[in-house]
Amino acid sequence: MDINLIQTQIEGDLAKIDSLSELEEVRAKYLGRKGLLAELTGAIAGLPVEQRGAFGKQVNALKNQTLDLFIKKEKELTAGNTVVKKSNLDIGMPGIAQELGVLHPITRVTEEVCAIFRKMGFSILGGPEIETEYNNFTGLNIPLEHPSREAFDTFYLKDYSKMLLRSHTSPAQVRLMKDKKPPLAIVVPGRVYRPDAVDASHSFMFHQIEGFMVDENIKLSDLKGLLETFAKAVFGNDIKMRFRPHFFPFTEPSAEVDISCIICKGKGCSVCGRKGWLEILGSGMIHPNVFKHVGIDAKKYTGFAFGMGVERIAMLKYGINDIRLFFENDLRFLRQF
Image 1 (cartoon, rainbow, N blue to C red):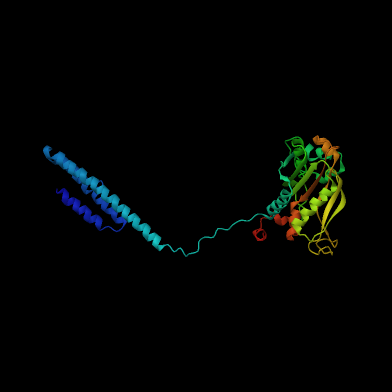
Image 2 (image 1 turned 60 degrees about the horizontal axis):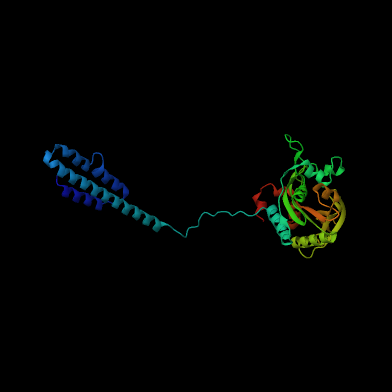
């Protein structure tokens, strides 16, 4: 067999190929188990001994050259297909839109409130949602027999003695004042739990933001000025604020904080119950018994504390009339924010 003639034949067949499928057919013809090069290799045994070496070298050289030609042709065809795909790509076609998420209104309000107090020098810290009975009640001047404990009653953990889901963020006061020494200015956001029946204004789980400041010569007027700055930052400079006497076991004196109705501007409407005022948070001077429980000298240091429901702030800020909307995951509601 003429090796040079076979090589010319292979090159001619490869030159005619326009697709990968045709290339596979020609590959089988020459390089397959029953292809022409396999036949040449099998013919070596039938040659005279003195011709086998030279002929075998020619067959091996042809096989290597043929492999290189097929690899080169495959690269050409693959590159060609890529060019064709790119040329057919219409970059003007609209893509598949990826819907972007937004912050939940509760998260948005929490971050906004924390940012306001951070600018006033407060640190933002956290506390555990599973608390001890002592931190949740006793350390906050709410002993077992105290009648106000019923208002803060919560979920106890069955397998753990005196462990519960915190009913307010105030236990963080006890933890942080035990761990850190005055001066202190701290805000603690987080979830809290109470066995309340769910309705338009109540939920068994909701969010609070607790804040407190402890140092020498802290006065009630400091608390009033701080909260007025906060209220105007959230609801606008046009609102008015008032302190209304109230009772909290962990503060004395204590006060509920109201702002003039943001809907009727204090004239009276259905939102404010015709009173012209909206309650936004509770506050007061930290009770000496709380200082005693955490080992702070109440004769040297004074302090104030305040706490607000995030859902309450969000409902007033955005005009929402049902707390359940925050937790139903209805995109029609959430997309408004």
